Image (cartoon, rainbow, N blue to C red; front, side):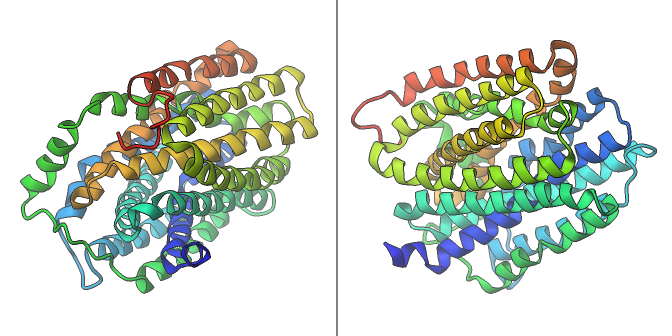
Length: 407
């Protein structure tokens, strides 16, 4: 067991997770704080979630990554190196935008970041699925998520703390340089060996992954579940930075408490989730973790009700991140387990694209909703919208002894 945990494959899963997590909040949390400092309207801040559209459409160009090999590094590593280099330059470029005076330039720069970040996600997800044995998917997903959270912590927690002392241009430059460990990992790790072959034509790369997936029982219900399972949690977290600032917390408090303190709870949650899944199976894990996620969202409503209180903030964040880590571990392991290795990039991109829809489309009006509903009512609403995703579990993942089987 220890040999597997400390293997090269698990270490690479962690480092690639770090590289994927780093860019995500640079176009949301950190950018929201920058926009808030520049006096941008709250509605506009909420609408900036739309720059994450590439995360929801990445399945459109994923077949290119399944079909073509562009360098001697191999099919996965070659594309990954290109995406990572382009991503580093685009993050640095975003730092030279001006949210207050040149919003169009900021939007274009942010879109480049999300496009290359989404491309990196496609290849990393495919690499992880192909590099890990089936029995290692759960543990590998947990370590990937932990690495992802370390990257998010560095970008958001570290970025916000730095922003209290440095210009945002320098902050984004530092974040771009932090992609170096991911680039080095790509250069050194071996290309995964695939015995199933790869698509020989673009038609095969585009059509066959979809045809194979939609031939399965409950295929549409699984897509609906992926779309809705975390929608309440996602909508709530999309606008939390302005929420914390509005009720009186400083950027340093947000960086220290929300990001750094919450980070450890997320790591614990993902690891606990991975262990519990071995015992209870994926179905029961999805039920329990989903219920806990909904309860944790209600904690934000409680914080909105009582106002500025650092100990309560710490408790709310600890529970929210703990349950989010558990839920995401089950979520990622579930999606990885149902992909066909011949079309890993395309099928995983399709599933994870749907996972990203709430983060972009459902999150876009959150600023408008919070502005007109008030913070407390808004977070109560987020709890209620989690119910449909839970009810879908009745169809394809009921609570029964055979919960661990594949769907």
